[in-house]
Length: 140
Image (cartoon, rainbow, N blue to C red; front, top):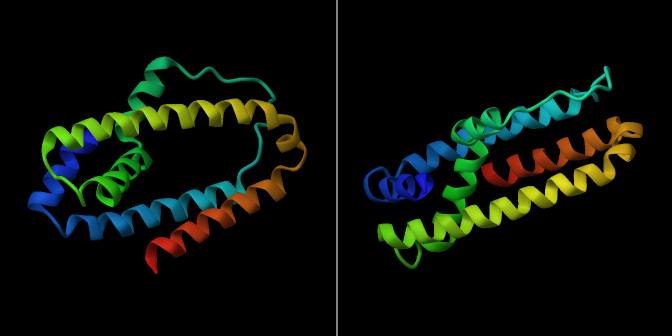
């Protein structure tokens, strides 16, 4: 919903903001690629508890969520309508899709965790390469 209001404001009042966000998003994805390429599994082997409130607050500062919502709205919805009720409706649809995708990601991660722990270096390099391709696609 926050993304819908943001996109409505951006598309109405600040059209150049999307160009700036492109470079901010590309820089963030590049940072993620480097971080993934050099990361290692937790040496302790113990699990750290992630609290509900940490996860809840992450939703408000996670740039990827904003970029996902903005990209989906501007790429598919604003071509047909820029009215606030339509943007809010589709943002709720996008949030639902994001929730399903996150749940699938968590389930898949639990299934492949043992494979990752054995081959983490190769997997991290492949994932970092995929992110670099995303940066290239954004900036070309």
